[in-house]
Length: 116
Image (cartoon, rainbow, N blue to C red; front, side, top):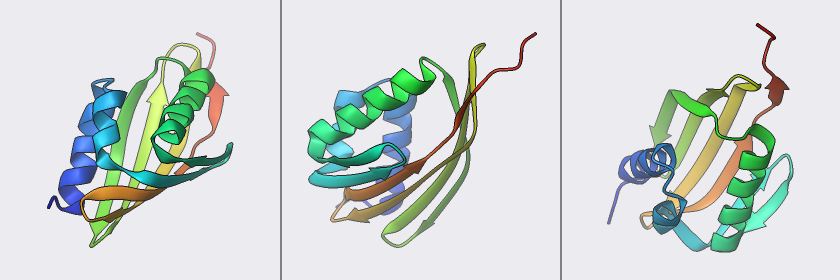
């Protein structure tokens, strides 16, 4: 069975590569995601949550700045930006059981990028 570290690192790699379908293998089929835009459940919920992020921030470059892992729990801070939108306060937390993500919380605020 994979460790929490292995699961989270694989999740981040697949998301950076744009491989949402591959990343679904890191999630339990009954995963719950809690976000500022609602509750998402299961693999269809992961897809819907990713679509909501894409709708709000588009095709941005993500930077993962801080990761903490303790047993079954993980915490991730991230930023994202492109020419039109910035996210400076992204934060996700995870619960990983039996090698799969069973709970994820997601928090971020998209803001317009400064005009240049």
